[in-house]
Length: 304
Image 1 (spheres, rainbow, N blue to C red):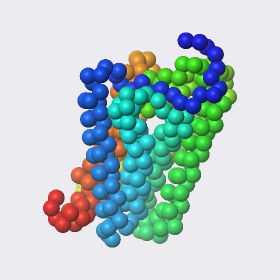
Image 2 (tube, rainbow, N blue to C red):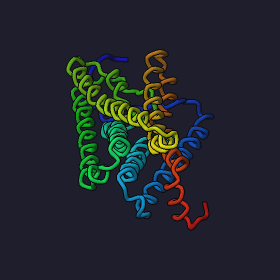
Image 3 (cartoon, helix red, strand yellow):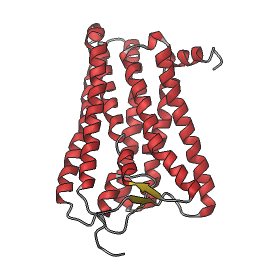
Image 4 (cartoon, rainbow, N blue to C red):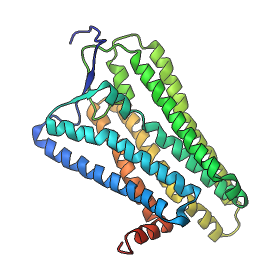
């Protein structure tokens, strides 16, 4: 492959999981099923939190926003993959690549805000309604969107400064920042600095989550009765499960990529991080949360 620059590029090629024709129908069916379940599950969570007045509290307001973001995330990745399989095309535009990278960090920011909500509920229960007022909740979600937009803007500026070689094949089923940087044939020093800034920005949410739960654990340990401890822990069990799933799968992607240097292994690990986690989030909250289960039953007239 020639090492020359291609400054007028308009699209990349997503290689996906496998080029074997006999596997394409199976891959199409699996990802179509995942997409439908993810969208339907998260849509039901949004409808339940909107329709039931007793769910009009901060925790479910943040949950409905998380469900909306998860729908956006899977909708930027899976439909394009399905279209490429059906049309036997691997192309994705530059704009499409940037769009796919926009929603990844928004999940982590919202999870950090939800951790803060649980921190206030458990550590300052008497002041919860005063602190977590509608204005603050709206402001926190707005800040999440602003920080996520800033993160996406930095990514876009980083990619715009890169010159790409004629080899524009991405060994993945979606556009990932690391993969794009590896395709560049220009000097990546400035891009590396931007990448460090992106990493620092991404560590903010996990730092906030760890701090919130350190305070939560201290408060729960101070509760004298076992029943009181269980009740306090149960209020954050669903969120803690989602956090563990989100960050463990994300960490698994990068550990797999660093350990094996195999594009196939990295793609397989990324499935959990990008599409399976958004699909499982509604189940985690509905199965472990009696309020959500009651709301879903009411939504369907008690038929579930």
